[in-house]
Length: 187
Image 1 (cartoon, rainbow, N blue to C red):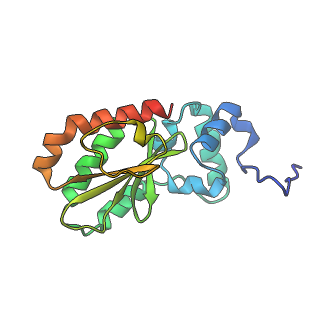
Image 2 (image 1 turned 135 degrees about the horizontal axis):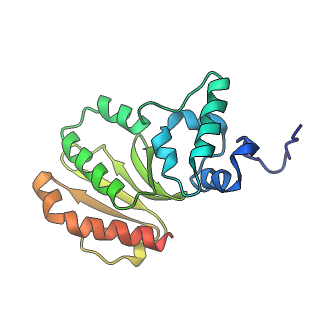
Image 3 (image 1 turned 30 degrees about the vertical axis):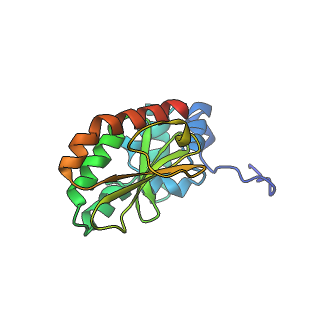
């Protein structure tokens, strides 16, 4: 029987999934087995090191505990309930962010969609403003990126705003460039 070190918390994932999958889960920020009920199997399959065998073992272990992967992501559930005048714009921006790199994971943080890349947060929606879309790039590498989209002179974050679909269309290429550069800086 495995004993836990009280000084250092170990993830409680099955040893049989192998080190690449265990490392992929840890790097993505998963430290507890029950966190897997908040993500879909498709989302986990995107993690580098997470193969079909590891996914099968995790699914079977969840089922043995009477649990399962999410059938729909927490963000999709959140978006179904979201009452925001710019909801369609949020959906378009979500898609742009996720397409910037297949390893970007989507979750809920600060009561809004948030995105991370191998454990590093990249950008999170701030949905309090109902007249425009406010995105917060909260990553220590963001100050290295020079772009007219990035506002503010904070040590570790920048802001970006979109007013409507027309504005998103006009800024899409630059927004994609910023996202790809940020992912590259966090690789």
